[in-house]
Image (cartoon, rainbow, N blue to C red; front, side, top):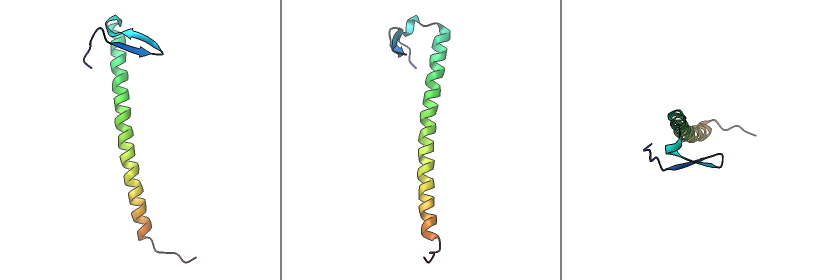
Length: 69
């Protein structure tokens, strides 16, 4: 994150100026941003895996022997 000390962030409906945050708070904010980015990445991976699973299931169903009713 490129830090602009005048940039504002909103947490729990309260605006904070980055320049007013302690180094510890800035570190926590960076950790939060990393965690959120990782969650987005994992959700994308999950969507890809679910799409592949669905395709494999359709292919499997097409190859199964037909049962008489």
